[in-house]
Length: 262
Ligand SMILES: [Zn+2]
Image 1 (cartoon, helix red, strand yellow):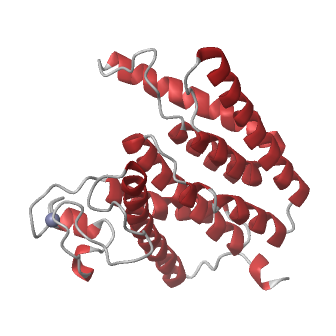
Image 2: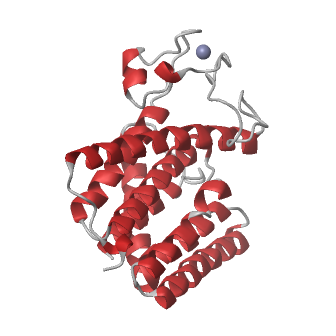
Image 3: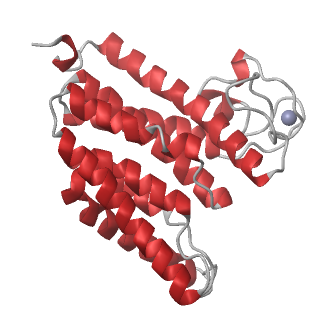
């Protein structure tokens, strides 16, 4: 058996290392989505900074954070959800991405398969959680987060002997379909209904779910988005009919669910 087709070891030490590694990946992605979002928005402390370069800083006072500020989830809880230097509230975004990233790994591990699939699905879930946060906050899906999911999906399909042509067809079908919807909506209604980021995310997701998975992904996405809008409406915080509703979170949910199913 090819070494990367072995199952993920059930050794508790390696599983714990996996959880810690994915929580750390979540930390990196939390900083990445904040910096990318602010850079695209052209505002905030992170504006203009590359998300690769530089140490992590407090988004409020700009103090460089040290290791004890950066233990995933634990630091956030231990510090009372506040910056140790300036006392500014630290949003739950970072801890949510760290926890979501570790949970994605655990879910992938529980479903089994070659370890390369478990790790790839964990990374997919971690990036999708970061995308959910940045789309909810800023109505943005940065290319630097969406586009790498496309080659990752192709690579996973290729390495585990999956259906590579289906993955390519999924990219074309998923991306093409949403691109068509985006263009038609703009023509008919004269405004943006769907962001180009959603189109790119669906194209990348197509690599994971194949052409047969695109329909179910969109069904899950539409159902989840409408349900969330309905709940928001009932809570009196509802979007108006012309408010742009973030579609990314629904798409992310659909892509992850169908990627695990295929
Ligand atoms: Zn601070």
